[in-house]
Length: 145
Image (cartoon, rainbow, N blue to C red; front, side, top):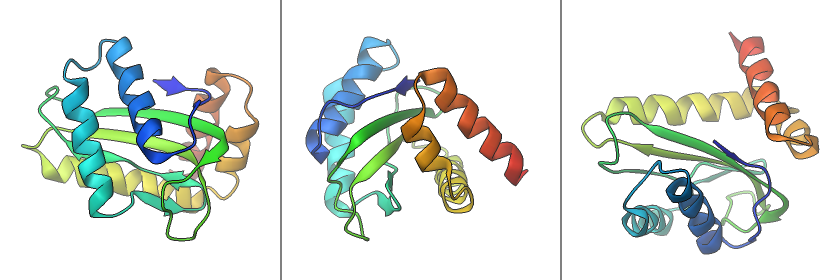
């Protein structure tokens, strides 16, 4: 699930846009609850990890398995990044609360991929369609394996 171009450039509306996308794709039913949980998490501390990437995440009883999506903002969005730069790539993760280790594994895998694949962000921002974005991520994962 990929949003190839986010419309908004502020944290709250970026989160709303991603949650709305999941609702539209019938991946979630409690969109308001998910939005509130994501917003609560951001208030604890930004999920931006720097280098143009944010990983908004929360735990919620949505499904038995974790839910992962990617959103791209070529304009960049203010996500209170520790390095002070806008975020361009968003990996949204929603995990079931009864498996906290799975949630940590997913977050760690994303952070590892982002840190090790130095040109991935630039390639994704230049990609012209969703399939190209997915192929870039797949290629970078294979390099790390």
